[in-house]
Length: 279
Image 1 (tube, rainbow, N blue to C red):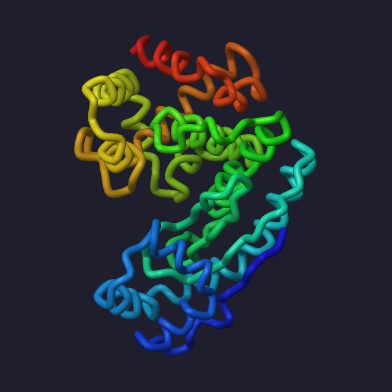
Image 2: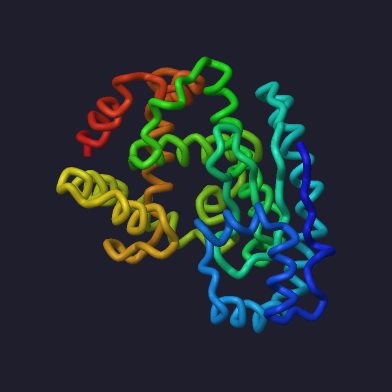
């Protein structure tokens, strides 16, 4: 595990030109960031510059806390799952796009955008464990001989297993926290989680109906997985709740490892179809 720490390279008095230089200095990281996780326009960057001074105290505290949390998280994964993480972990100050993500390699690197994270210990622990969970899922699957060429990366059923697995791992690594933290990565997620539990059947059946109706996967992603969605119920990212329900139900029937490896099975999509049809 290699931590690429860009904090000290961030300009102390950011201007558009200095910000661009910072991005160029870590070109591979920011090329992917701006391609998939944040728009790269002068307007966006200028707005980010206006926010940095207001958020700087929080950014500093995230930076002070996240290093030891990363080390502790990796250690707990090693103790519980005997995993090593041969990856880069990028600590960046972005332009208020995504807060954290694993990139699109088979064994993915992780990026944490510190301006978008909370410095509170429990939410920060959970989001670190969640992103490590994506890597752990792929590591375990790879150890079991996955033919990665067969994975339909663009399909919502794949996303459900990925997010269900990562959420499950975060609960295993940092157990017994307030349930909403595993979905919101903040201390303000109770309303979202209470709504999701109360309307579980409606949420899952609505998601299934949109898939059956032939909605494009780009629409499904935005409405159900993205923070920019949520038109149906007024809450975004409800697919994360669905993913957790799916993973917990299937692991109760079999076990943790079998559920993690379901996407190896040719009948995985049928299994998800049958689960969704219950609702």
